[in-house]
Length: 77
Image (tube, rainbow, N blue to C red; front, top):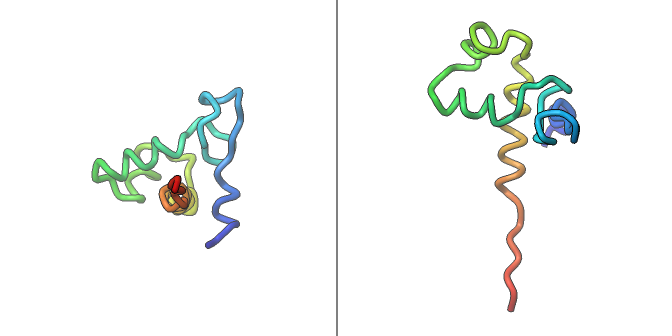
């Protein structure tokens, strides 16, 4: 796992309700994931939708989502 990419994901309780954002901007990880899910390419997101982003930010969002979804699930015996 590339921890340098994950450093791009920031948390601030006073910004966006404490949701994970990109590089302390008011762009949430979920905003990027939703754009990708709606069929936009990373290039379209960077060029047309969120020009403050860098390609690595989009990769960081995907990695963050993968890490969050791949957490262990404990079951009571």
